[in-house]
Each structure stands twice: as C-alpha cells, then as structure tokens.
Image (tube, rainbow, N blue to C red; front, top):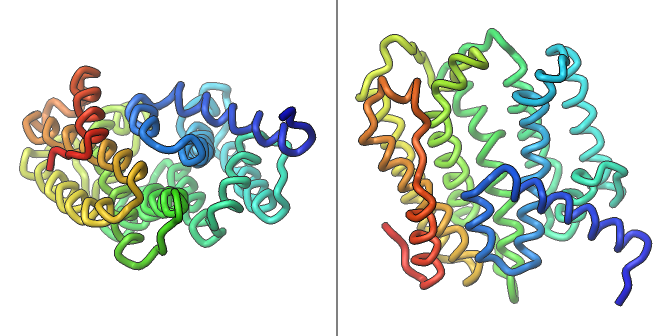
Length: 289
C-alpha cells in the first residue's frame, strides 16, 4: 500500500529518528535490534528527541557559536514544540513529530517529558555545583523518566502488560544505572571540556578508588532492581533490555578495575566482540547476572 499525507510524513519522520540512533549509539542500536519492528521504531523516536536536546546543550550548538542564552532559548523552543506536537499530533520538526507520534501511541504524558527538559536546562548552568539533591534531581529528569518512556513502549508488545509501581521503579533504576555509568565514563570530558561535574562534592584532584567504587555500588544495586522488572516484560522487550542491562553491567565491571586516576584520561568501553556475545546471550534468553 502506498502511503500518503500524514502517514507518509510520519514514516519519513521515523526514518530520520532511526538514522539518529544508528549514528550515535552502538550499544542501544544493537540492543534495539532484539525488539519488534514497531517497538524498535518507537524507541528510536524517544532516543532521537533525547539526543537532539543533548546536542543543544553540549555539542554542535556550542561549536556553531551559540551562547548559553541562545542555547537556552533553543531548548525552550524544543520543549514547547514537543508538548504542542504531543497535543496536536503534528510537528514540522521531524524528530519532534516522530516522538509525538510515539507518545500518543504509548501513553507518554507531559509529566514525564517536562522533567527531562528541566534536567537539560541544568546543563546550561556553567557554574553549577551538584550536591546530593541536585545529583538525584538531574538523574531523575535526564535518565529515570526516559526509562519510564521506554517502559510504555515495551508494555504494548503483543497483548500488552499493565504498568505497576514495580515495573516503573525498575525502568527508572535502569535509566539511572545507565546515567551513572556515563558519569564515570565521561569524567574527563565533562571536567576538561565542559567544566562540569555531576557527582556530589566531586574534586577531580582527590577522586579516589573508594569514591569510584561507591558509585559503582549504586550502579550495581540499580541494575539488580531493574532486572527484577525486566524479567516481567514481554519476551522481545525482555531480551532487548536484558542486553542493554548486561552491556552496562559489563561497563561497570570495567570501571571497577580501572584506577580512578585513569578515568580522567581514558573512556572505558566494551569491545565489539564482547557486545556481540552479550547480545547473543540475551537473544538466547540468558543473561550475565
């Protein structure tokens, strides 16, 4: 059947989102291959919006010469357009349109979109110093609510499942684990290029193995709680999220064996061959926990 009008526009918008996740994320791109085609496209729609917002505050916008005030204005415009598109069902911005289509299909509401943009705004404060409350608030908006968005996609696989507090908590904790891993992986770039730190009371000159291991312990506990929820997801979504959790669990293991002093100069990664083994294990219904 030949698509026309809004259907054609939406399919084209979703193709754009798929290109974003392919270009920017090897790990998520690999894990998402285990999803149903419908869920895979919807996850790409979420990822693309999150990535575009992140690029406004941290990447190409600054390289293009935008001031902090201009970046803040652009981020405000992106949020406003996203909320309008969720209400209307259309945006001329294809990434926003694709996200809005997924939000309307899966029940993503503004109450988990607004906190995301609030955390992105925190990145625009160049003098911010994070205490524990700010650290937790940032993680909630930048990662936990994104986990909640993804859960709403997974819950609709097949006959669907009902989202309860346990599932939502697991989704949030998985998002938090991903974010904390990235805090440690990006320690050097955040400190040296962006002049930013997220860890409470962080001192780059005295960051110790004990400090690093305390965060790694948090990540391990987040992943433990997340896996309880993952085991309740529909089959394809369970396999994909197992792969993602195991990839980040392996990253956490690599972080544990990396001296804290090296995290400023080396970004920990997992070899592609190991990623593929983790993917194969998840596809078989097993995990590394």
